[in-house]
Length: 320
Length: 281
Image (cartoon, each protein chain N blue to C red):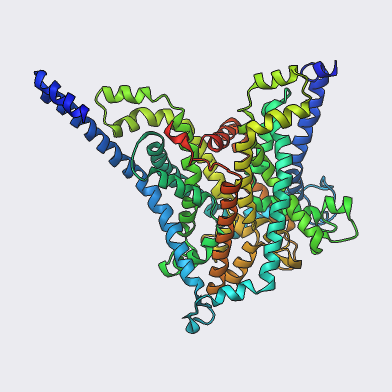
């Protein structure tokens, strides 16, 4: 109100009100151009992402409500939630769900501990820091299938050095519990460096002064770690846990190569793949797809709501 | 005394050196093992020795004389390069807009890419399998390139927008003062400054595409578009009675070489890319 009045008064006094107006118009035009450019620049990326994920997820939902087996295409029909009942009352599904959850929880916990250790080493080592960081990236970069073959041959009876060293008489990959342990080992080995890098980003945020002050006050190394570093790093830790939990839940490559799901070591992703590509049962495969999607959504929801993980990118960082 | 010694001195150096060695052993042993297997002769491959007792290049000769591996390698390189190029170009455009411009739907885009980053890829396998079959994309290069771009884009957008926020934007303003349009400012001033970040992102995206296995086995059915990770699981020896351990190992070593080169030459960039995206993204 008062602003318009001022502007009016100004306009009355100002000999060149048009210039003022023109400038304001230019600003809003610039704003409009900026918006247009922003949308134009984002459109291709957004379109690809939506076309390849958005549409298929709804299509998947639609397929999951049908009896649709590619071996018997004539029997295709809408059956409502029947596929969900079939899957959710199937003991194989729950076995693989249990296996997936177990591997996820165990491997993420181990990764957090080892990842923190590796992050501390990479961050603080005074000897050959570049070398350590370089070498630690190898497990991160290496093709998962390659690493999985390395572990498989390492544990294969006769062929493997680890088998020869630790269990020369038995074939561990054909026994359920040892096989699950080896799968977890392969998963942990591959992803500790990634976890460590995410945590290292958090470590870099811990002020040195604070550590020194704590040290002066007589805090032990362990106290400095738990009382100073952990609280500062908490957001980074939660993001790392969220990323890795969701990633571990979709475990596929390692299991495929190591056991191919034998002896009930298959994950939910393996089950879906088997139903879909081997069994050609699109209805059941899609149902499992939807259920995995829901499980992942629940995990993400728990992390964000219960632990207060700030999802990277959704914070105010972008506005700064 | 011990407390002071913990921060400096040769004792501390020795302790760090020991820890460093543990990390090096941890990271390298599985890689060295597959290398060792690839050099073993057929007679000694099942001896369980970490270091080959007798060395041979036969496994490499075998894979490089079969069409199966060469074709898969060609597919892997071609598909990963094309997907990387497209994802980086689209990602650069979007990340620039996210980092610099104010426009409606920005938060939505960030949210969608976050969702995709966390998306269980297997959930897409069934609908993509069906859609690609009806569109004629199944078992073709574009059939793999498309999902790779999609899952690489969130990674590209995060990493790049983190890099873009570090760029001195006063230069852009100066360019605009001199009469450049926003588009010109982007092309002439910012793009060259952003090149290192773009390059880093390209490496990360390439590693991602190079690594994929699930889409590669689900959306292909022949050698026409099967990439090396997928082809490995179909490897048999030169006859069906032959154990493929040696040839699989040799092929595995070949596709690990680019990764090792990236890591050796661009360690700093990769670490910067992964950590900046994680914290500030």
